Image (tube, rainbow, N blue to C red; front, side, top):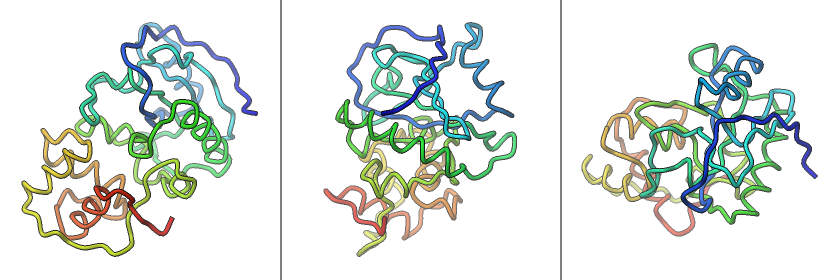
Length: 230
């Protein structure tokens, strides 16, 4: 049984689409108190469904049946109103602007069952469990390269990073971008799309360069059952 601290935010409206996605964020503010204040401020016009603190407490801020304002201008797999189609979880972390750091074990231990519960109830597929940077590559970096996606992938709560039988398809850069678009990304800004893909699936080297490893990882992700060591 999940325990929540109800902390209602007024920043929400009616959904226009059924829930088919889960978007993970970091708060990107100096501390939890300032992040919570902003998410509850009518002037800020931002919110989320849940916030997970560094010590593992979970705040429930917007009812799931409502459209929280967490994704902003974003796109994923043909959906342009990501807010309407998603549940948004903010994970307390100062982010790249205020001293990005690893996510504490207590925080991830609380996040995992929350994600599992949401995914089960809404029947969200692994490919639609994404980071903010995946749906808004030109604007966002969160939850960032330190986020332990492998923890979720081991429980089938996210796609794994493919590691087995990788094969470089030798696509041209244009071919890679077509495949990246097919996978789900907005590729209108080519560099931003590649960086977002690397941040999620090859976080140890985020250089915006399309190389053989990137091509091989993307090809594996497009197969019916991506395989990784996770």
